[in-house]
Structure formats: structure tokens, C-alpha cells
Amino acid sequence: MGGKYFVTRNGSSIIAFHVGEKLDNYSFHVVASHSDYPTFKIKENAEIEVRGKYTQINTEGYGGMICSTWFDRPLSVAGRALVKEGNALVSKLVNVDKDLLMIPSVAIHMNRSVNDGFAYNKQIDMVPLFGGTETKKGDFKKVIADSLNVDVKDIYGSDLYLYSRVEPSIWGANDEFISSPHLDDMQCGFASLKAFKEGYNEQNVNVLACFDNEEVGSLTRQGAAGTFMLDVLKRIHLSLGKDEEDYYRAIASSFMLSADNAHAVHPNHPEKFDAENYTKMNGGVVIKYNANQKYTTDAFSRTIFESLCKKVNVPVQHYANRSDVAGGSTLGNLSNAHVSLHCVDVGLAQLAMHSSYETGGSKDLAYLYEALKYGQILLFFRLLLDIERKKWHNIL
Picture 1 (cartoon, rainbow, N blue to C red):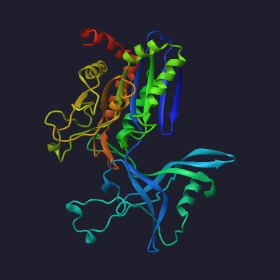
Picture 2 (picture 1 turned 90 degrees about the vertical axis):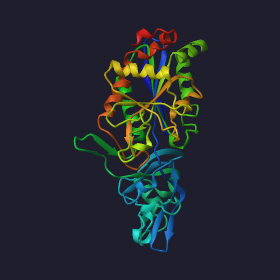
Picture 3 (picture 1 turned 120 degrees about the horizontal axis):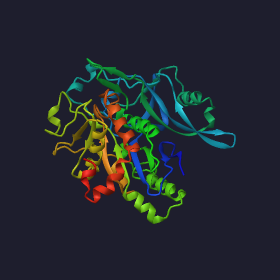
Picture 4 (picture 1 turned 90 degrees about the horizontal axis):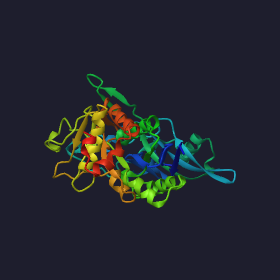
């Protein structure tokens, strides 16, 4: 037994696992995050000519972005392409590493009501500008081909998206804030990966899952609502030579942390948050709650995770939406539809979620990393069985 492995699905979701060497009575310790973020996907027939003066790139929205934050900033294109190499088709990553596109605002002289509230039309207002009068039909495909060092005719298909080229920054009176594109959910993904690489226990199978398509509902083969997690955990179990009863026992004593960022109380709009269950940046790891099970946290899983954080001196915060405001959902409850694990929803507090440039606390990443790393090392979640037998004194 033992070893480190990973498997991908669709080239956009990954599950890595570290198998312990003493698995007589093992369990899975899972941390799940997501890799995608709200952006714009480039349509198949991408180039749009405008009055012989401009070339635009035809896009459609992916996920629920704040449209206004995408204007007037350098953008480029990344994703993947299927390329012919000899007699084979090969998937290659695309990143056009230059300031390539921009979505220009309409001048206020032509839209006097823009600051009074404006409904952006994604087919009209959110189309990026690519080139001027010297741009020819097919130039966009050539840019993609050149970035891959292949001929245009050898590209058979692609999944391409816009991304912001604005550089991250650390700022504030005491450097207490960090701003960057897609902190949601790369903060949790990074902390999870770092903890996974450094945390280990010989009696567990530690699992790192990073799913695609969370921002559009996860209902894909590579999403958390698909069978990816179920398939991998079962295949791990079978490769260990265990029987079906052993699998159900392992699942019953397993634990998952669904790690996805949370909302920090907004300095301009504190009224949009619950009177007591709100969070602040640099206040520690957030535990998230929802009565309608948009989040999986219950008294049991909250106690497990908060007790772990206390053992490693990591501060914890508690978040719930105002009762008259509908909140989002995340990975935990969707994944549990296929693999029923004890689960807690956690994250890091941030501002401007789903903006093209989000803001978080510069201290919080280290808090989440410490909690996740020592959760894997200490066999802490094994106390689940004791708690179910009402041996609460073992964790307090």
C-alpha cells in the first residue's frame, strides 16, 4: 500500500489522493474546491465585423459575473484546443500571453443614465474589441494557432475563455488586503493543494478534489454533481483489495470539507448582512450555514471542524445569509448526492465575489492552510465514530 496518485476528467477537474501504508481500518479525508470562475466563453464563429472599422470577438456569459467590472481593462484568451499531430488529435493548453482584447465602455455623453443603474446586454454590451481596419477575417484563429505554434488548419476544436490581465496587488494601510482575478475559488484551491502535499497520515486516504463547472451548477461529468468523486473513491477501494462492506465502513467514517469562498461584510452596505452571522476579512476560516441545505454544515460537522481549528489556533467565523436574501450554493451538497460523507462547508471571507477583480484578507489563506494540513495529519476526523457514540469529551 501507499503512494501518491492523481486522475483528471475532461482535463479541467482533478482528484489527487495519497494512500497511507496502514489501512486496516481506513477512511477518506476529502477537501473539495472548484477551478472555474465567471467569465465569457468565445463562440465557435468568433469574429464579428463592425462597419468595416472593427473586429469584435463573439462571446457568451459563463456563470454569474458582475458585468461592469469587465469593462476598460486588458483581457486575453486561455483554454484548450484539439490539435492534429500526425494521425492523432492532441489536447493542448492555450494562453495568448499578451493584452489582446478589451470591452470598451460607452461614453457617459451617450448613456447619461449609466450611473443610475443599467442592465447590460451580454450580446451587445459585453462583446470585446479585437482589432481595427487592418484586421482580416481569420486573424483571431491565427492568433490562437501562433500561440500553439501550429497551423490554423490543424486546430479541430477549442474551448476558449476571456481572462483579465490586471495584476494582483497587496494593499491597505497595513498590507492587510489582497486583490486579484478569481480569488473565488483559487484561494481555497491553493490552500487545499499546499495542505494536501504537506499533510499525511499512514492510516488514511487523503483526497484533494478540484471540480470544474461549479459556477454553472456542477451538472457535468467533470462537475461535483457528476460521478467523478464516486468513481475515484470506489476505484481506490477496489485497488486496495477490500470488499464492499469495507467500502461502506470507510465511507461512514470519512469526512469532506467543501472549501469555497464566503462573503465578507461590505463596508458600504452592512445592512445586506445578517445582524450577527457575518464575517470579516482576516478574521479566520468561515463556516457556512443554510437552513435549506445550500450548505452541508450541521451541528455535528461544525463541531468537528471548529474543534480541529482550536487545536491548531486557527480563528473561526460563522456565516449565514439574511433570512430574506437567497444565497448561493456550492460543492458539498451536490457531491453528497453520489457519495454520502459527513461534510462541512468552509471558505475565506472576501469582497466583490464574481467581480473580475476580487478582494480578500492577506492573512486568511495561511489560516485555512494550517487547518487543512493538520486535519490530514492528526487523524482528527477519525473521532467521528466516537462522537456518534456520544463520546464528546474526546474532542473538547
